[in-house]
Image (cartoon, rainbow, N blue to C red; front, side):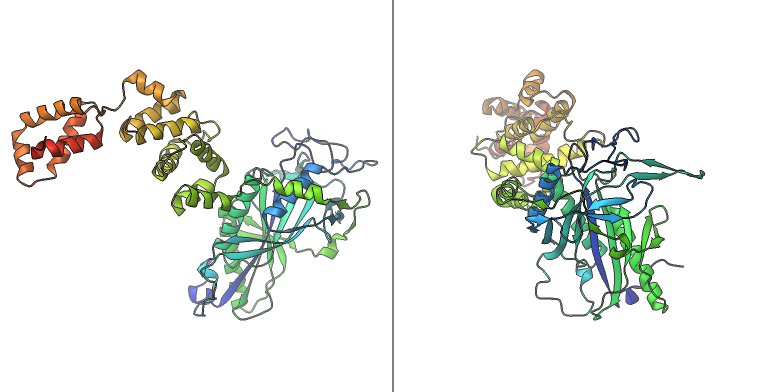
Length: 507
């Protein structure tokens, strides 16, 4: 039986998606204890008495975590609250020794924000008139951002009657970013997540590593017939840690719910997990409501009060965010929308390119920046083997800027530049040093090139006659012969100019 419903059936339903994104903050220590928050240590080596839930311990709030939460709020157009409060969320999991989680509930640090994304036409009603703003970016509302501590990690050992618990992650600082149910397709959900991840990485508040759990998503998914005002019964898809899995899990869940409704069966509110090997979601437990957690104000922490000076200082420290950088690359440097998008969708890549731009001559023309962008996208990225990251590549941004400037100055050809670039990647040497050591400087001497061309014309009367008889394509053959005679070092622009002049008899 097909997992998908027919397109005709699918178009009878509107998809409604809200996302809850957990972002681990890049603090050195945990949110309420002095234990290290570094990733990758041996199990249960980065725990404190507080993380273990031992009696007689008191939490102390990490102020850096507060600043990071404020940064996220400002970047996502939220109202950052001067007064917020922590609460206890009571639940009993083996990786939460205290039996409760310290989080924020009724009074979060940030509320009422938004993030703009590209609108997916698939989310519009089939056959209906598109809204007036259908071509404009879609504003996804953000309900709240709240601070909390992470839980530990349980590992279920196959074939064993027990599970293993690692509490290194217990107490690591988190923010949870909760959207309104404004997304209407799996593509919009992924677009939102990618943009959100890019922002927290640009801010420096998280490394956004989905494989390590630094950025993970719960998706609330429901469907309803078009025109129905009430939301359908939702399922929560828990702890999805890749964009592809988010996309596939939502699509599977949408089809599953539609098939149930088409059969006259009810959709049950529940928490479900996604199995990427099978491409399916499966039930984990019935969904808890807020009253199930018995929230009450955290008695060991006073309310969090942020004064105006602290708030202003944090807001001023945001730096350049992805949308602003993309606009600067397009408007200030003359890059295409595509190139600017590629260069800003990854923070390290955008930093690399920005440093290369800063090393260009002050009077550089837009064509130089376009060439530099092409080298970063088409040459540098193509040569990375998946093991070497941008931080480890031996060609540093000023070196690449110098190489591209040498091409622009006609000191070397593009073909020779690729040879020099490969040597730079291997040795880390300066381009000028390699060019000098290997004698690769481009020949732009009119007299020297003219002599080579005169010899070729004298030795090849038939191709000369072909050209003068109207076969202009033969110029390419002559250019190839000149490049061969000069070992690829002749200035191709000058060669073309001289060849045409001499073949015509102008020189």
